[in-house]
Amino acid sequence: MLATYRAALWPAAPLAAAWFATQPRLRPHLARFRPPIPPGLDQPLWLHACSVGEVTTAIPLLREILQRWPGTPVVITVSTPAGFALASAQSPVPVLHFPLDHPLSVRGFFDRLRPRMLLLVETELWPEVLACAHTRRIPVALLSGRLSDAHAKAYRRMAALWRPVIRPLAAAAMQTGAYADRIAELGLDRARISVTGNIKYDAVAAASSAEERAALRAELGIAPDAPVIVFGSTREGDEALAASCYAYLRDRVPGLRLIVAPRHLHRVNDAQQALSGIPHALRSQGSATPGEVRTVIIMDTHGELGRVYGLATIAVVCGSFYPGVNGHNPIEPAAQGVPTVFGHHMRNFADIAAQLIAAAGAAVQLPSPGALAPALAALLSDAPRRAQIAAAGLDVVRSNQGAIGRTLDLVAPLVERVLAAE
Image 1: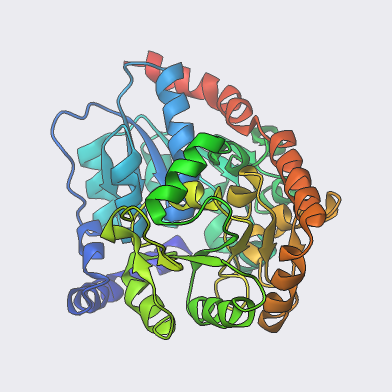
Image 2: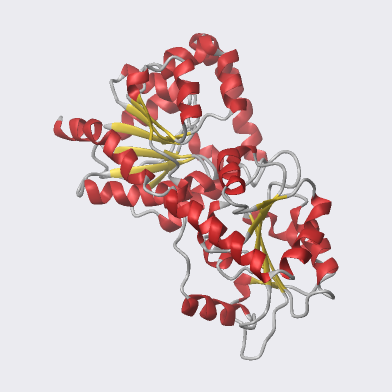
């Protein structure tokens, strides 16, 4: 089956290259055919995170790896342009493009990088990469592993392809028992599977101090007592939803402020168009002048969403109100002690969403986009309920932390073995 997979890739590769070359937004993917590697890297540990969400998870994990094994060369690879930009801004180690899962790209990358071990974050299982690592006797571990029901069904349908490449995994540190069962069904020995929890709970920023929040409010032109709704990680349709909610609320809630943070910066223009009927400012315009009031702010900068969530009276986690995206991380606002709201489509964060909902209502999940504006109005008028949701959400985050330590304890024997084999 792997031979069939490889055969399909040969004609697909030039077509993909031509498509990437003609699409400005996709052009950075051309680097993945032969990812450049800076000189001086000497058999590093290789950590891979796919995109923005996985990079956010991987950075604190990476810092802990550097503390546990100081002096060890480490690199991180990323698949998407947005993830690459975020990793480049935050990573203390070299950031490389993840090779396309094509024999020439993968084998050339292994030849030039000569990694000692590969650590994959969440669900980054690629047949050619796993097969190449196995052939070269390079151990591979899955960290904070996640196999959604949809992924597991897809893998089972192609079991002839996946079983041979998953079976050699040296270790799988899975988020939940259900995910552990699913990877065992795909052929991985139970002795190599552990449940260590979800690193996303450790990866979130700690709640901002009152002084930090006050300073950021002043910087953004938001009065100390102004209610703020943050629409975080907006995707297509979400900015229009934010605009309609603001129109519904602004006469009902005096002094209301709105912050909209697109998930990808190439969509800032889309956000501006959706909010064109409302005066708004871009974050990149810099700090507000003394006395300047900014009613609606569009975040067009990298890496500030966690801090901005800390300003929220209510946080709305987007990508969850319309089909297709399947949600973004609700832990980020919950960790800031902010009442959190999200929509029905949370498949990518189903376990986390369920934990928050089950824990004394530590978040609010809504059945449809039309339910959002009335729900926000009700919450804005009910301070005790907001406080209860925020406190319960913070408790869920704190009670689930510690996964980074458990994960690295699990893989430590493997890492120390490869480091000793110099």
